[in-house]
Image (cartoon, rainbow, N blue to C red):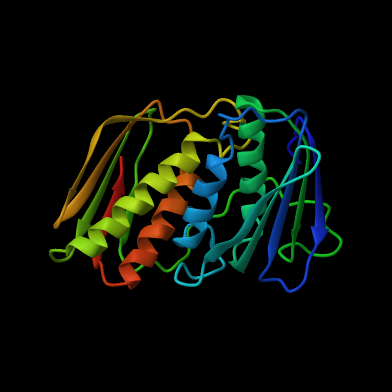
Length: 244
């Protein structure tokens, strides 16, 4: 287990398509603070197929926010339905909360209720999910430095709607990377950076993304590959994805 600077409790919840999160802060929020945006990245990546891991087809990976409210006692709650996720997604959720705590405000306690863990498990394994296989396109991962060039080649020209889907997936994934979602032993919470080296190139024939100071392992890119897999199944026929 990764040590967290706040108490984390996991509780069973039925039906398994539900997930609830309760966060207790150490002190009240100021009127201008909006610290929970990273949870939006988590939900968006999950909804777009990025958190099904190696066990769940990307077309089935889903997560929908059903309610979000502030409760008495510096407490906030989120309820999700349509939960179809890899169990290690809970580790990613813990990572996001860890990053929120480090950036402020400080979290006192987080209670995560779901049906993703076995009854005997006290928490998720500290591992990140992999890409789902077989892939419907060629995937080449050759990144060996802190710079990464991501190329997505389409088999044919794509329309505006599918390109918009690709752009939404990209920004959601990058947000989750930058806010520590894919932290692990090599890149612990608080050390993840990953910046855009220059503006993405999004055209009807392909996509190009340029990253610098990359502090995330191959599993983070597996999540992006799963999102592209889901988009491919919706009609954006991808021929090849390269990370170099």
